[in-house]
Image (cartoon, rainbow, N blue to C red; front, side):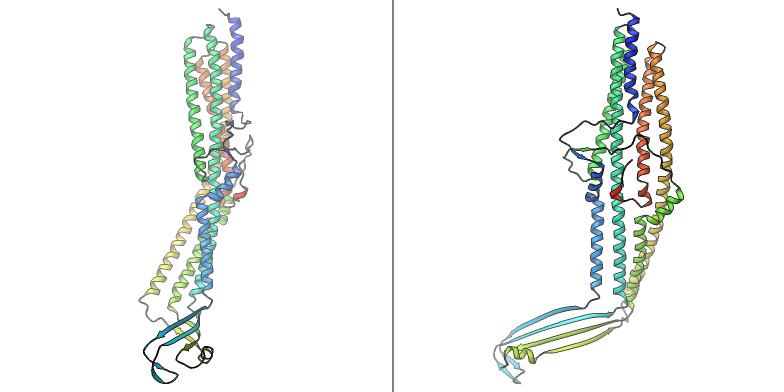
Length: 461
């Protein structure tokens, strides 16, 4: 039988090494340990940003909308230019026909050929063409602003999901270190039980704790996989591929940035691209009203024509006939709408309703933007307090776990107290990880809420 003089030093050394392994868990200075996979494609945060800007469905649709609006601007601008068309006509006549050259009816086959060119231009149409061009240009500017916001949103979404994945990896590391520490403690208790220093119930209780830690590791692994799948979907990657997302380099301590709510609100209302898009669409709707109202005004157009002809019944040569039968025309036409069955009035009313809806949508978006900024400001303030509280909890949990271990070593404490202290320590370490990444996310992407985020320059720190 091993004497207590030998058991206690052995007990003390093993338990202290186990405690050190556990306390090292929330140290925050170590990078997340992820099993190396040489077959997986590494994807850094910068890679994810580039993929999001290229692969995002929303960004691609916004890009197409911007290109389509540019084409509309060109189309409406070209409407101011005159048109030009060339036409030819050839007919073959049989039987009795009247020969204009001879002034009599002849019975023969004749060939008639005419060629001509016509051109027309609208000089005035009640200002509708120019209003349409201005409306198209404003709509194009609005679509460009939508594209800018879509790019910002794509990067914001990727950053949020990337941080979620990194946080899940950190939580997995915490749970794995806890499992390792619990297994080490289980080995210590087994030795103590065999030495008769502790009852067999302590061993059973510790085995249950180890099983619980194993379950926590499995849950953490699943959370990391789910976060990885979400990122794969957002980046439009091949779901059959294997990817290893490389966590961004983040400092152990987060530098707290202080924000001013009034300053954030003022910047957001003046910088958000989605607000710029809606404001531009309000101006575009005014041009739509002008275009619809212009249908009541008269229009002025000019037409030009030039043609010549050939007839086989004539004795003149082909080139001579084309030269002698040349003629041109110049005409100016004025059209005054007197009654259009109310079409212009209905179109104007619909344009005014659309303009009012655009103003309502702008006012609603301004309220939404202000609420988003205020919520982000409050979330940031809460994240600062949560990090401070989590760090204080971690320090207290470390001291409590250390004290409980020492009491257990001298026989003054129970295994239940040690297990409880360790659970609180793991919880505190997990809380620090969550709070640190939450604060880093809130600070790094506050620019998204105020609208001055540059997608290519986003960093997480």
